[in-house]
Length: 257
Image 1: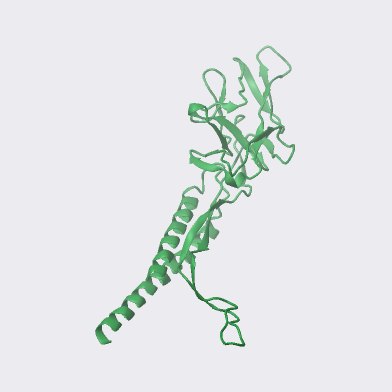
Image 2 (image 1 turned 45 degrees about the vertical axis):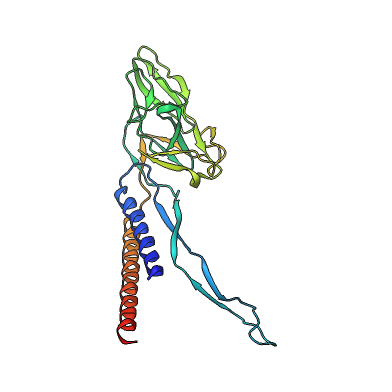
């Protein structure tokens, strides 16, 4: 019964992961999570290679498992679909990397959601008002903003014929991007597992290119998630039936033996 209970717990947690993926199917820049399982400790009744007689040894042994648990969740970093928006401050990354954002308290956050806007002071900020790093200030009276694939930001000022370069958006990548910790609001933060952020120019050293006027959609595949959901549900039902069967066996023993 204990083994089946661990199966119920593990499948319940997997269902939570799947539910979160489906809930974020329309979240900009969202990367789906996948639950990974691992066995619990084994009880060794007979070790492989132990003597079975004076002249022979056990070829396989006897090991009894004690159940299963969720080892962790891994973020699948495949590219989401790029959708045209027409907004000059909507940016998508075509390839690896993250936009760097200054979070409250001085913490640096990293995101794939490039739905930026301009603050009252002309700063390039997220929808929550967090400043994109390195800071970009759009001059007052700018009539158009152009952002190149390498992150170069240019603005056309009223009365000028040629656009002026006002800064460059840099892209961060990590030795192990899967080690970043999700904090909500589409932000990830650096951890010891992810390694330190490497800031650089978009399109160089494995970083993706910046696409202006586009947003990256979620990489959640609804059909795949629904199949996983059905599989999880069936596994949960089987573990539940195992508890029922074990209970009936114990009941029989108590009443008849």
